[in-house]
Image 1 (spheres, rainbow, N blue to C red):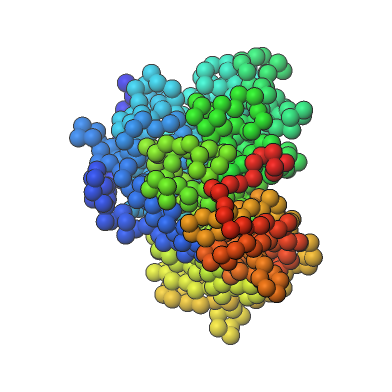
Image 2 (cartoon, rainbow, N blue to C red):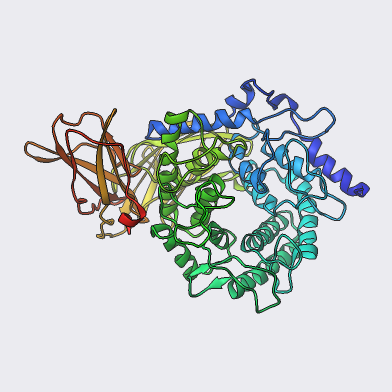
Length: 602
């Protein structure tokens, strides 16, 4: 039985903040939720279609609370996987408060015991206390929600609960080596890194609330875990953070030989030093490991134990795992590669709705139309919503300072409308721009806010009309945006760069019903802007793409009836262009679309 003070606190978090009028009824569309969803502006219709489809699916998972539970909503009609609610919150936050991400997390806390234990969620009800514990990802989800909403009251409510849970894990899941596992004495890489991630965010939360002693203690704990993970779980022979076989006293922890997606947790949790982070990231560009179609399978291609997409862990490409990779890349200051990984994942998803009319729970890493099953947890919206907003559009909220940080990374017109930012609703749109050209940005807001634009200029100036708003600082323009509609311009000079992107490889051209489908291996350059597509005509090569293609495929709607040849060149953000790829022939007949295999890519 929970103590009175804990019961009071969890009840306040779980019940007092529930706007029941916003909860969806099964089988009915919730108008309030739909009108509160932001609208991205993207250059590909397929991306916009995925975004709408993702929210259609996600809103179907909203449920009213059970009649006998004074709780919020759950987001799944079946028992979710262990980490699902905290990952679901990472996209649900963007429709706050219309979609109740905070209340979903409150459902989990309502089952907390007096000793701090929080059970793994199961279906519509909190799981019985005898079940496995929930993963320590709540502070990560809560902090990201706080950055978008600025809700200090909620931060103060949940911090004591999350502190208790963290201490329960320290007391009950910490081994002699200082690492963590699902049972006392066992060691796993993911839980050890999740505890480091939890300590980091609890430190941030405590510092935000003025609890400096608590913030310092959690920061020290993060440092200790960082040292232990790097000392015991890094494999020099594999150049990878490895999982462990069993519980062993230090220093006899035994990492195994599987390269799993868990190797990216050290990046997200701030555990990996720069040189090891670079080693891990290099695996994303190597077809022997995590460069697949689509990218980042749960287990790398050449690891022992890869059981294929239907295995219990296996080599499938899963939404939460891909989001982990994208967030890890952003944490490691690799936004260009994060954008590429996100776009390649979304490109693969764009095939699925045409085939079956629904987003999948997982994908095969071998081909775009591989084995999968319908999503029953709501996780599939992570890519079309969270990855799109954070990695492709390059947006990051900081409601504490009423600020929106934006790195416009696309050549075509792009942005977002009706994005919640604290108690504000803001819209930002960047016009199409060529390499080195000015940024032309339109804004709309119901209250003033600060827009920090991360540019590719080494130096420059922000303008409102003919009025200078001051010079850039380290390539960033700080603009105090007015309420209502406004227009701004950022001019400047790019840093000198004469290095072109890598040459695209393994171009294939296949006749399909829509015309000619081109596929090639994506480039991984950090400053990649996209690809130019060329076709042979009577007088030589002609570029047939408009703005640079944002992902590694292109459909030529009007190929010549006979044969022709295609070529692709990569372009970077300052205008450098790679050599054209080896040409691909399109004959008068063709088979089913295909893509480079791992062996060909190597």
